[in-house]
Length: 132
Image (cartoon, rainbow, N blue to C red; front, top):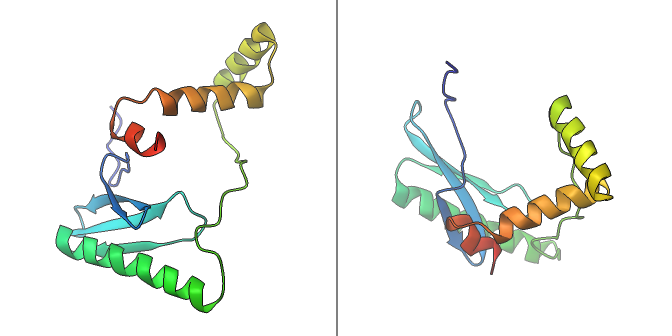
């Protein structure tokens, strides 16, 4: 049996402030919460010993980021380039290659379609964030 990871991030718990979304998790060994703003290029992270502290730290981190962008005359929340690398098992790669040959599509198109389908058909809380 595989031992559970000390920390997991399954995106079930999020905070939202000024249209910024942060994933949060509990570090039970260290007795504090940590958070990280997602879906932007900047690295914005924060922590707190309670949920109230975590929320305050999140609000402050976002406000600090926006203030810094203003002072440096940078546009906040720069969009992603639209590309990323993924790693899959050799067997999964083989299955994707076969499926692409069968469907006469590229691997990029296959992955794009799978991602689109997953995001648009999500029935959990993730769906409410990506569909807006």
